[in-house]
Length: 309
Image (cartoon, rainbow, N blue to C red):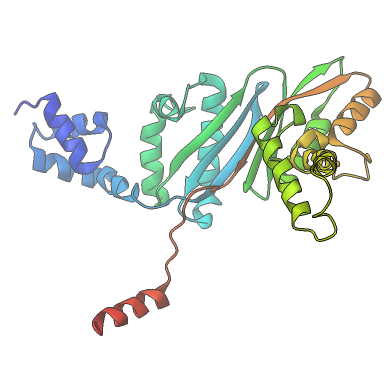
Protein backbone atom coordinates (compact mmCIF):
# COMPACT_ATOMS: atom_id res chain seq x y z
CA UNK A 1 0.00 0.00 0.00
CA UNK A 2 1.44 3.38 -1.00
CA UNK A 3 1.56 6.30 1.37
CA UNK A 4 1.90 10.06 1.00
CA UNK A 5 3.65 12.91 2.77
CA UNK A 6 0.32 13.67 4.43
CA UNK A 7 0.29 10.15 5.88
CA UNK A 8 3.73 10.73 7.35
CA UNK A 9 2.55 14.02 8.82
CA UNK A 10 -0.57 12.39 10.28
CA UNK A 11 1.45 9.58 11.87
CA UNK A 12 3.83 12.13 13.36
CA UNK A 13 0.90 14.04 14.89
CA UNK A 14 -0.56 10.80 16.28
CA UNK A 15 2.67 9.60 17.90
CA UNK A 16 4.87 12.71 18.30
CA UNK A 17 7.72 10.74 16.72
CA UNK A 18 10.19 12.24 14.21
CA UNK A 19 9.33 12.43 10.50
CA UNK A 20 12.07 10.02 9.40
CA UNK A 21 10.98 7.37 11.88
CA UNK A 22 7.35 7.79 10.80
CA UNK A 23 8.40 7.31 7.20
CA UNK A 24 10.32 4.14 8.14
CA UNK A 25 7.29 2.84 10.01
CA UNK A 26 4.98 3.35 7.02
CA UNK A 27 7.53 1.74 4.70
CA UNK A 28 7.81 -1.26 7.02
CA UNK A 29 4.03 -1.69 7.22
CA UNK A 30 3.13 -0.94 3.58
CA UNK A 31 1.42 2.29 4.55
CA UNK A 32 -0.98 0.76 7.10
CA UNK A 33 -1.47 3.53 9.69
CA UNK A 34 -2.53 1.30 12.59
CA UNK A 35 0.30 -1.15 12.00
CA UNK A 36 2.72 1.78 11.71
CA UNK A 37 1.68 3.00 15.16
CA UNK A 38 2.27 -0.50 16.54
CA UNK A 39 5.63 -0.66 14.74
CA UNK A 40 6.72 2.58 16.43
CA UNK A 41 5.51 1.34 19.80
CA UNK A 42 7.36 -1.95 19.35
CA UNK A 43 10.53 -0.02 18.53
CA UNK A 44 10.01 2.02 21.66
CA UNK A 45 9.77 5.29 19.78
CA UNK A 46 6.11 6.06 20.50
CA UNK A 47 6.74 5.36 24.18
CA UNK A 48 9.64 7.80 24.08
CA UNK A 49 7.36 10.42 22.60
CA UNK A 50 4.95 10.10 25.53
CA UNK A 51 7.83 10.76 27.92
CA UNK A 52 8.44 14.07 26.15
CA UNK A 53 5.45 15.54 27.99
CA UNK A 54 7.09 14.99 31.37
CA UNK A 55 8.99 17.84 33.00
CA UNK A 56 12.77 17.61 32.71
CA UNK A 57 14.25 20.01 35.28
CA UNK A 58 17.25 18.02 36.52
CA UNK A 59 20.28 17.11 34.43
CA UNK A 60 23.73 18.56 33.83
CA UNK A 61 25.24 21.93 32.97
CA UNK A 62 28.58 21.02 31.40
CA UNK A 63 31.39 23.39 30.42
CA UNK A 64 34.31 21.99 28.45
CA UNK A 65 37.00 22.87 25.91
CA UNK A 66 37.32 20.68 22.80
CA UNK A 67 40.36 21.30 20.58
CA UNK A 68 40.54 24.89 21.80
CA UNK A 69 36.82 25.55 21.31
CA UNK A 70 34.84 26.34 24.44
CA UNK A 71 31.38 24.87 24.90
CA UNK A 72 28.85 25.11 27.70
CA UNK A 73 25.68 23.05 27.37
CA UNK A 74 22.67 22.16 29.51
CA UNK A 75 20.89 18.86 29.03
CA UNK A 76 17.92 18.06 31.25
CA UNK A 77 16.47 14.85 32.65
CA UNK A 78 13.55 14.21 34.98
CA UNK A 79 15.57 13.05 37.97
CA UNK A 80 18.98 13.71 39.47
CA UNK A 81 19.46 9.93 39.68
CA UNK A 82 19.28 9.57 35.89
CA UNK A 83 21.56 12.58 35.39
CA UNK A 84 24.30 10.88 37.41
CA UNK A 85 24.34 7.69 35.33
CA UNK A 86 27.32 7.05 33.06
CA UNK A 87 24.99 6.84 30.06
CA UNK A 88 23.63 10.34 30.66
CA UNK A 89 27.05 11.82 31.45
CA UNK A 90 28.51 10.33 28.25
CA UNK A 91 25.57 11.70 26.27
CA UNK A 92 26.17 15.25 27.49
CA UNK A 93 29.93 15.03 26.80
CA UNK A 94 29.33 13.81 23.25
CA UNK A 95 26.74 16.52 22.61
CA UNK A 96 29.36 19.09 23.66
CA UNK A 97 31.79 17.54 21.17
CA UNK A 98 29.15 17.77 18.44
CA UNK A 99 28.64 21.46 19.23
CA UNK A 100 32.38 22.13 19.14
CA UNK A 101 33.11 20.27 15.91
CA UNK A 102 29.93 20.79 13.87
CA UNK A 103 29.06 24.33 15.04
CA UNK A 104 25.23 24.06 14.92
CA UNK A 105 23.30 27.34 14.89
CA UNK A 106 20.83 26.32 17.59
CA UNK A 107 19.36 23.35 19.46
CA UNK A 108 17.25 22.23 16.48
CA UNK A 109 20.32 22.29 14.25
CA UNK A 110 22.25 20.30 16.87
CA UNK A 111 19.53 17.63 16.83
CA UNK A 112 20.12 17.21 13.10
CA UNK A 113 23.90 16.81 13.56
CA UNK A 114 25.65 13.47 13.39
CA UNK A 115 26.23 12.07 16.87
CA UNK A 116 29.98 11.62 17.50
CA UNK A 117 31.18 8.08 16.74
CA UNK A 118 27.88 7.11 15.13
CA UNK A 119 26.05 7.22 11.80
CA UNK A 120 22.89 8.26 13.63
CA UNK A 121 21.70 11.81 14.22
CA UNK A 122 21.54 13.40 17.65
CA UNK A 123 17.74 13.08 17.54
CA UNK A 124 17.94 9.35 16.90
CA UNK A 125 20.44 8.86 19.71
CA UNK A 126 18.25 10.92 22.06
CA UNK A 127 15.31 8.63 21.31
CA UNK A 128 17.46 5.61 22.14
CA UNK A 129 18.65 7.21 25.39
CA UNK A 130 15.10 8.07 26.43
CA UNK A 131 14.23 4.39 26.11
CA UNK A 132 17.34 3.01 27.84
CA UNK A 133 17.42 5.59 30.66
CA UNK A 134 13.63 5.67 30.96
CA UNK A 135 13.17 9.43 31.28
CA UNK A 136 12.41 12.48 29.19
CA UNK A 137 15.69 14.04 28.03
CA UNK A 138 15.86 17.54 26.57
CA UNK A 139 18.75 19.59 25.18
CA UNK A 140 17.95 23.01 26.59
CA UNK A 141 20.70 25.38 25.44
CA UNK A 142 24.37 25.75 24.54
CA UNK A 143 26.97 28.42 23.80
CA UNK A 144 30.17 28.05 21.78
CA UNK A 145 33.31 30.21 21.91
CA UNK A 146 35.66 29.63 18.96
CA UNK A 147 37.87 32.69 19.48
CA UNK A 148 40.43 33.60 22.17
CA UNK A 149 41.18 31.34 25.14
CA UNK A 150 38.30 29.56 26.86
CA UNK A 151 38.43 28.08 30.34
CA UNK A 152 35.73 25.75 31.66
CA UNK A 153 34.53 25.13 35.18
CA UNK A 154 31.86 22.71 36.40
CA UNK A 155 30.57 23.03 39.95
CA UNK A 156 29.01 20.30 42.09
CA UNK A 157 28.83 17.63 39.40
CA UNK A 158 27.00 19.80 36.91
CA UNK A 159 24.74 22.07 38.95
CA UNK A 160 26.67 25.02 37.44
CA UNK A 161 28.56 25.18 34.17
CA UNK A 162 30.72 28.26 33.58
CA UNK A 163 32.72 29.11 30.47
CA UNK A 164 35.08 32.08 30.63
CA UNK A 165 36.58 33.62 27.49
CA UNK A 166 39.87 35.52 27.80
CA UNK A 167 42.10 37.47 25.41
CA UNK A 168 45.63 36.39 26.31
CA UNK A 169 48.83 38.11 25.18
CA UNK A 170 52.28 36.61 25.62
CA UNK A 171 53.31 32.98 25.85
CA UNK A 172 51.49 32.29 29.12
CA UNK A 173 49.02 29.74 30.45
CA UNK A 174 45.98 31.61 31.77
CA UNK A 175 44.03 28.47 32.72
CA UNK A 176 44.25 29.10 36.46
CA UNK A 177 43.21 32.73 36.01
CA UNK A 178 40.18 31.68 33.99
CA UNK A 179 39.23 28.96 36.45
CA UNK A 180 39.37 31.36 39.40
CA UNK A 181 37.19 33.86 37.54
CA UNK A 182 34.76 31.07 36.63
CA UNK A 183 34.58 29.99 40.29
CA UNK A 184 33.82 33.61 41.20
CA UNK A 185 30.94 33.62 38.72
CA UNK A 186 29.54 30.34 40.06
CA UNK A 187 29.78 31.56 43.66
CA UNK A 188 28.55 35.13 43.26
CA UNK A 189 26.27 35.00 40.16
CA UNK A 190 26.98 38.56 39.00
CA UNK A 191 24.20 40.17 37.01
CA UNK A 192 26.62 42.01 34.69
CA UNK A 193 30.20 41.40 33.64
CA UNK A 194 31.34 45.03 33.88
CA UNK A 195 29.89 48.33 35.05
CA UNK A 196 30.13 49.69 31.50
CA UNK A 197 27.57 47.06 30.47
CA UNK A 198 24.91 48.08 32.99
CA UNK A 199 21.95 49.67 31.15
CA UNK A 200 21.29 53.29 32.11
CA UNK A 201 17.73 52.33 33.02
CA UNK A 202 19.10 49.97 35.70
CA UNK A 203 21.38 52.71 37.06
CA UNK A 204 18.45 55.14 37.16
CA UNK A 205 16.32 52.57 38.96
CA UNK A 206 19.00 52.01 41.58
CA UNK A 207 19.26 55.77 42.08
CA UNK A 208 15.50 55.92 42.68
CA UNK A 209 15.72 53.10 45.22
CA UNK A 210 18.51 54.84 47.13
CA UNK A 211 16.64 58.16 47.19
CA UNK A 212 13.46 56.40 48.34
CA UNK A 213 15.39 54.74 51.17
CA UNK A 214 16.51 58.16 52.36
CA UNK A 215 12.97 59.56 52.01
CA UNK A 216 11.81 56.84 54.40
CA UNK A 217 14.66 57.35 56.85
CA UNK A 218 13.68 59.85 59.61
CA UNK A 219 17.30 61.01 59.85
CA UNK A 220 17.54 61.70 56.11
CA UNK A 221 13.98 62.58 55.06
CA UNK A 222 14.39 66.33 55.52
CA UNK A 223 17.67 66.59 53.62
CA UNK A 224 17.55 68.66 50.38
CA UNK A 225 16.87 66.65 47.22
CA UNK A 226 20.26 67.52 45.70
CA UNK A 227 22.03 66.19 48.79
CA UNK A 228 20.08 62.92 48.58
CA UNK A 229 20.96 62.55 44.90
CA UNK A 230 24.64 63.17 45.64
CA UNK A 231 24.63 60.49 48.33
CA UNK A 232 22.73 58.11 46.04
CA UNK A 233 25.29 58.66 43.27
CA UNK A 234 28.02 57.68 45.70
CA UNK A 235 26.16 54.48 46.51
CA UNK A 236 26.02 53.48 42.84
CA UNK A 237 29.63 52.33 43.16
CA UNK A 238 28.50 49.93 45.87
CA UNK A 239 25.80 48.71 43.46
CA UNK A 240 28.46 48.10 40.78
CA UNK A 241 30.66 46.30 43.31
CA UNK A 242 27.84 43.95 44.20
CA UNK A 243 26.35 43.36 40.75
CA UNK A 244 29.28 43.50 38.30
CA UNK A 245 31.84 40.70 38.02
CA UNK A 246 34.93 42.80 37.35
CA UNK A 247 34.08 45.25 40.14
CA UNK A 248 33.25 42.55 42.72
CA UNK A 249 35.66 41.74 45.53
CA UNK A 250 37.68 38.71 44.49
CA UNK A 251 36.49 35.81 46.66
CA UNK A 252 39.91 34.11 46.74
CA UNK A 253 41.36 36.67 49.14
CA UNK A 254 44.18 34.20 49.86
CA UNK A 255 45.42 34.88 46.31
CA UNK A 256 44.58 38.56 45.91
CA UNK A 257 42.84 41.24 47.91
CA UNK A 258 40.88 43.60 45.69
CA UNK A 259 38.52 43.44 42.71
CA UNK A 260 38.26 40.65 40.15
CA UNK A 261 39.56 43.10 37.55
CA UNK A 262 42.56 43.78 39.78
CA UNK A 263 43.16 40.06 40.28
CA UNK A 264 43.21 39.39 36.52
CA UNK A 265 45.72 42.18 35.90
CA UNK A 266 47.91 41.13 38.84
CA UNK A 267 47.89 37.43 37.90
CA UNK A 268 48.72 38.23 34.26
CA UNK A 269 51.62 40.45 35.29
CA UNK A 270 53.04 37.69 37.49
CA UNK A 271 52.79 35.29 34.55
CA UNK A 272 54.61 37.75 32.30
CA UNK A 273 51.81 38.61 29.91
CA UNK A 274 48.42 40.28 29.60
CA UNK A 275 44.96 38.85 30.16
CA UNK A 276 41.68 40.59 29.38
CA UNK A 277 38.22 39.30 30.28
CA UNK A 278 36.14 39.11 27.09
CA UNK A 279 32.96 37.21 27.92
CA UNK A 280 31.48 34.39 29.96
CA UNK A 281 28.42 32.15 30.14
CA UNK A 282 26.95 30.79 33.35
CA UNK A 283 24.35 28.02 33.13
CA UNK A 284 22.57 26.90 36.29
CA UNK A 285 20.94 23.48 35.92
CA UNK A 286 17.16 23.73 35.73
CA UNK A 287 17.17 27.51 36.19
CA UNK A 288 13.77 28.93 35.29
CA UNK A 289 12.16 25.55 34.60
CA UNK A 290 8.93 25.13 36.52
CA UNK A 291 9.18 21.87 38.40
CA UNK A 292 6.11 19.78 39.10
CA UNK A 293 5.58 19.45 42.83
CA UNK A 294 3.25 16.71 43.97
CA UNK A 295 1.50 17.75 47.18
CA UNK A 296 -0.51 14.69 48.12
CA UNK A 297 -1.97 16.26 51.27
CA UNK A 298 -3.24 19.27 49.33
CA UNK A 299 -4.69 17.01 46.65
CA UNK A 300 -6.60 14.96 49.25
CA UNK A 301 -7.81 18.13 50.98
CA UNK A 302 -9.10 19.47 47.65
CA UNK A 303 -10.96 16.23 46.95
CA UNK A 304 -12.56 16.27 50.44
CA UNK A 305 -13.62 19.90 49.97
CA UNK A 306 -15.12 19.04 46.60
CA UNK A 307 -17.03 16.09 48.07
CA UNK A 308 -18.71 18.35 50.66
CA UNK A 309 -19.90 20.94 48.16
